[in-house]
Length: 640
Image (tube, rainbow, N blue to C red; front, side, top):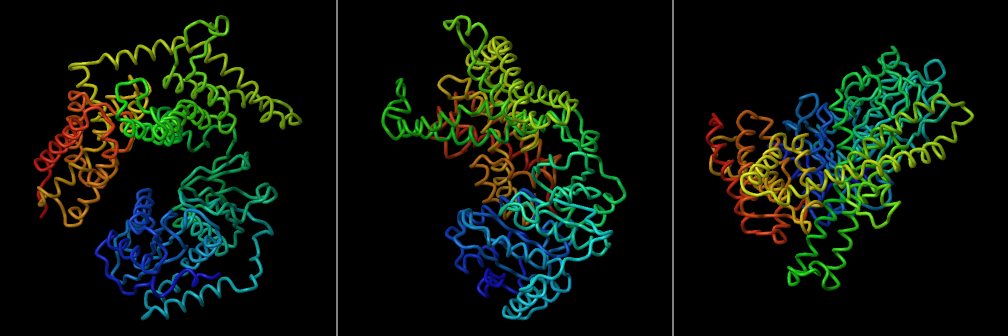
């Protein structure tokens, strides 16, 4: 298979003139659809936009490679457009993008197409080739240029490997991006190409969605001067213990290959020690609070799929079983809701253990995972030494607070244990991961949690009772506070703290219906909706491009995706943020006042039917959005 098998004339548009990034994406998606590769055009576009939300897929030098793996793709393929006038695609070098290739990769299936796509990434590093593509007058010429370049770069018989400086590889690299399709291979090619120019041996391992390719060997690692990790996702560094390691974003591998290679050669990279701690440069630049936040977010990010999936499935069981409302069988009085309720409860029950496990793993690496999971399970069960002495003794779950404690305590214990074990003879190295770490860690975390569970359980019970009994002005203030926090940084630490508190409150609430979660969700829905309304009723405060985003922000707001408001907040934070915070706080307070409560931690409009007082909740979100809209109209200046 060659690249021209993935690209045909139906998927090419030359000399296009899209007005902006959105129009370029729409055009490319339409070409993919016209080429017959999609089953659901809108779903594929949504997956493309989700990838763009992580970071722009523009790679600089006038090239952009939007891409996504999607269930809406039935056949791998490419679409291409040339835009000689250029499009602002938020490229890292600030230059307009003129050459676009959109990659459609199926969610399931083989990975042969990834090899073809990596070839294209390598070919695009040739500036003369890109110039010829831009000057092509018809699609047949465009395809012939690609075919000729591929045959030049990848003939049937591979060329001999280039000579390495001093007979060895001096610099090794690992490249990886979140989707593992485009940037992964481009960074690898840029580093290896620059190494050849500098006469320095460079080899790059690509960790793409098809698995690791060009894997670094033990001998190469032992003999190199250092390793560059150009990645936007976690990479296992255990094999690089004791070697200089330079960690940078994958975009630096594409745009700054010479600078990175010279840092390795000049000895400017810190030595990596695989003891669960950050590399020297990271530890020196991060505050204790920042490191704690990263550990917590590692746990939260792995916990959320269990909470969201389990919570929404449980909410669906209540919706299907509305006839049994008010009875003990509510949610499971007949087969279908009982099935959903059981599945949701099982997923939800993993919330605390998963949170603990991945906090501990973030601190102590792989040895912390099991210790954190067991600690979180013990916290959720409420196990104590008193219970083992007397099985009739009361048990109080330490809940979410106990899970947090178990994660951090287990992680730090394993981190200390690993450092102590570093003093053991090398002959016992093999016993550490299979005997010493798991057995010692299990005993230690079990004893610790059984000792502290009674005290954390009492605190947890006090918090539950306080939330359940809260009323009047206290409830309104809490609702306004957590909802306002959702709008402060729209996905940042304040937003995440409020959301984590909201999800934890579901487990604490009577019957699993949480007023706090309802306020949190209302606060997260308001900013995008308020901005969308403002672009309609106060048009002179926004540019034409900003006004075009109204439909998208309505959809994102109603779906509880606060991040839709980020571009507006980033461009005018002093006016947008106060308006959104006040609107969100108003919605949260009204949600509390109307007695609204949610059994699901996500879903927005789609879980309104299963809430307590859904009409009152809709009114709270609408009023908060109108308040935000009016403040935006008052605070924002008119556009010239």
